[in-house]
Length: 354
Length: 72
Image (cartoon, rainbow over all chains, first blue to last red; front, top):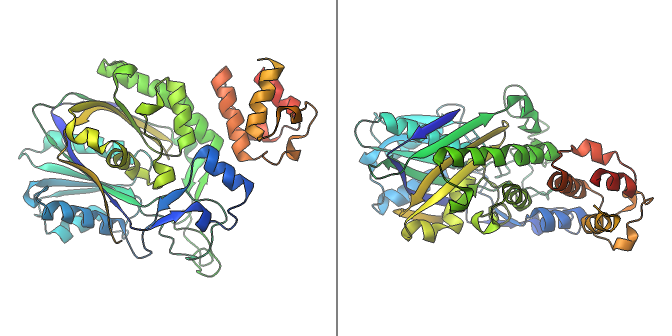
């Protein structure tokens, strides 16, 4: 499915980090295991952030939103819709967006929606936000909230990990609004559900609820989300589907790959992004790729975290940049957006005590 | 791809000297024959030949020659 939008822009991005960094050497049972060392060197893993075991994504989002409101960078009355893309719900119901609306004391006419998406979460959330902005009549903004904290490890806390874990806990707030001066936006979304088993968190839903054994603190070393992944299928899927999808979106936007200033991708690991850049024939300097080894993979939170971590200066004060944003992974899904981003009101990481 | 090139590529993936990459050597005897090596081979074949292989088809191979044959 293709979408095109006009008169919409991102005005600010804030990423909220937990204060504690975990290093692979400390987390894993046998840091001298040759495969672990090779994983770190070749695939690119090292450090990640994890929240406390009692923190939820709504806590992180509220921490960030309150900072924005207290500093005058966001006005409560300007919020027209809250779009939350996360897998880390506080409860089955109510939704995280409903919790945020209540905690911030926003008007009852604020539209609230949660979208459960992982690796393509940011691009899917942007498409949803643009569609809402098309219909919002009173000039209010959409607040896109992304990120996960599935790594808080409530079970088997304190135990060393048998295998390296690359997940990171990050939450982000992106403010999007209508603007007469914004350039045209081109989006695509594809999904191949027949390959869904290639990347799956199998347990915890109704198909396969958590068993007492899984949640036993003494016997289980399962993090909150144990991901089963068919690594070579996912690798092949990215190498096969992404380059033509990005060529396609460039063509629709009538722009050459060389003219794109930044390729802002979901961050599975550095290795996969190196190979993707090579397959697309774009220089690695235009593809930030170190997020997973420095902060961890936060699913829907990776693309905004890449922006606030690696290109915030450029996006604050150096004019509009031509950007391709691409999310890809669980589904299996791949979604790309061409848009200009720049002259943001804010673009930064803040560290919380969560 | 020359035999010398194949040797260089596989030696780098397996983290050994080129003279250790003998055609009849068993893959399982290399300490670095693991999922990272398999993924590196998949990437190498994709880059050079545009063919997408699955890990299952590489894990079942026995010798260095079996890998060399894939590079052809």
